[in-house]
Image 1 (tube, rainbow, N blue to C red):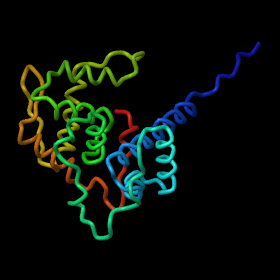
Image 2: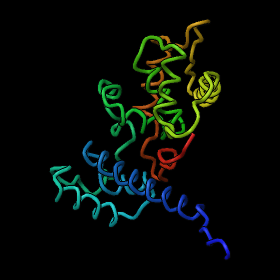
Image 3: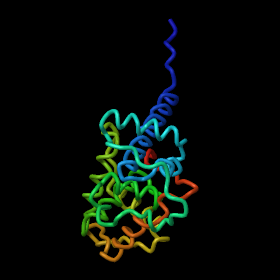
Image 4: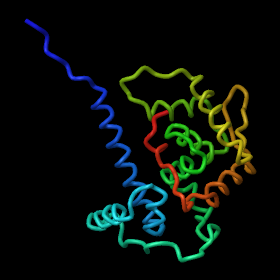
Length: 209
């Protein structure tokens, strides 16, 4: 008797990834709308049609996630400096912080999570950063080596270099960002071209490290 044919998992995994990406896109749309970002600006940032943004927001209003739909677009001729987010609340919302890191610094989901921890604490041990990695991984997979932290920090340093932001090594302990480095990073997150007219790539939100 012949063995049953087992369908390949690749298609299922691809569908799951696409579903996750679509759900992340909806979360981003709703989060930006809640911040008062205009509908057309959200559409350009997320690279989706404006009508689709309106549809997502109407559904969010129906569910009570948001209380109102923002205006259609920025006023003609409004400069990017007038669109910048206030710096004081960037570090207060963990999800918003990771989203901004992925947009401005082009970090992956895992890299954004590590960077968010570094930005919010005076210093972090390698063990603490390793715990962040393990929290985001599939619990059924084997635990990663502690050296994985060093690899991610190396990638982060390369991506932060154009912004003159440095991560300092505390030998035998972990890593830290000096106050001046943190200030430069926050400035980049709040005043960089988060909503350029040509749109931005939000794929890192759904990208696995």
